[in-house]
Image (cartoon, rainbow, N blue to C red; front, side, top):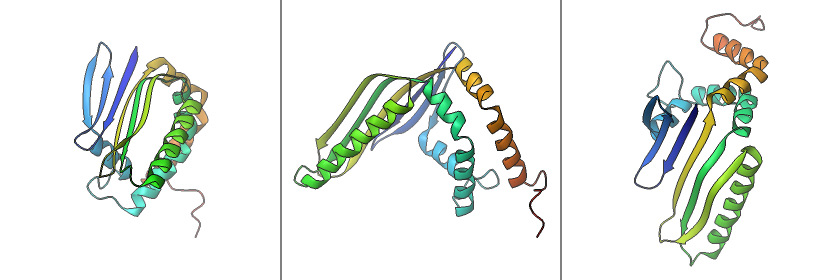
Length: 173
């Protein structure tokens, strides 16, 4: 059963839509997702340095699982438009360089990208528009977790130590 992720970000709206085909449709505000990823479970309202370090460490420990899932994910549509003032040539050239680097990173990390569109448009104020529709199957997520089962145990151990459910073996200070 495929799962569709639709990420939309522009000046007016930022949404993350998750569609479990034939089960349910879930729409989440992208700001809430980012806040969830930058905070800890004890205080979801305040972004702290401790929360950033914890989530960065958690991301680093789960990097292999995320990479394995991305290698099995198909991007059905990708649109990335940067709005720059054309009178500032240096910024326009840098925007094209950044878009080409983004394109190469996406082609290296995802299985297939079907419909992609990159552009730098003229506007007085800098703005970025991004839309991506990704599809991954639940079985591929399960396979990625099984392949990287050692990382799953490391993540669980890290979370237990952080939230105080077990004592760290190295804390003999």
